[in-house]
Image (cartoon, rainbow, N blue to C red):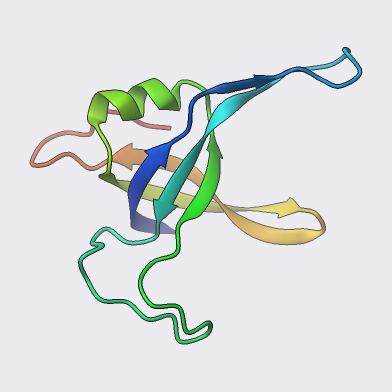
Length: 110
């Protein structure tokens, strides 16, 4: 499934050491986005009654921060979603992401 999103912000990269001192570090950055390519369009979520667009968050690879910085934010991106199990539930996640340039080829991918 593909869709356009608007990336609002990307948080500073993090590197979290395991609490026990043994194991892998958790590295990445957090992306905040809204699930539309046009935030100027009026939107009402009929289920929740929310007016406008409520930002969502997604964990991204650590190098995504520099790619987003090079493109500039906010920006529009085309995403491909996948499904994964998380906490006993099946949830959508961003499987791939390509920045949508203003009249040219894509600058970066996830």
